Image 1 (cartoon, one colour):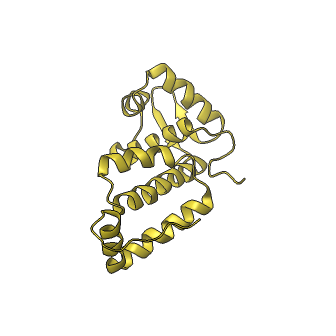
Image 2 (cartoon, rainbow, N blue to C red):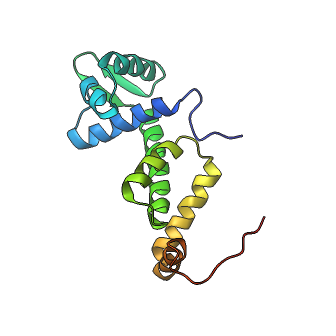
Image 3 (cartoon, helix red, strand yellow):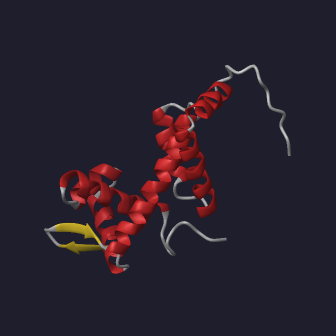
Length: 153
C-alpha cells in the first residue's frame, strides 16, 4: 500500500512540521517554546523531535536562533495541511460542527490513502462549484429530505 506519509514519519512528526509551517507564516519564525505551546508538549520533547527532523533534512535549526523548514520539510507540511483542509471541508459540508470537524480531520489527515484524499478533494471541489448539489446533500445528511436512498453492498 502506498503511504501518504514520508517513510519513517509518524503523525506526531507531521504535526511538528505543520506547527513550524504555521508559526513561520503567522510570526515569521518558529521557536521551541512556540512549538511547545502550540502542540502542548514540554520543551525537551520538542528539542528531541526538532533534532530528529533536522537530521532527516526536513528543517534547519540554529541554537538560539530558531528554525526554518527546508524545501523537503515545507513540501511535507503542505501535504498534511492540504489533507486536513480537504477532510475538514468535506466534514463541514456534511453538516458536522466546526470544532468536531477540525478534531476529526486532525486525526484522519495522517492515516488517509493518497487515492482517497484525491477523491475527497474532487468531491469538495465539485460541491463548491455546484451549490445546488451541496444544498441537496446538506438537506439529505441533516435528515430534512424525504428521499431515502437504499443501502447497498
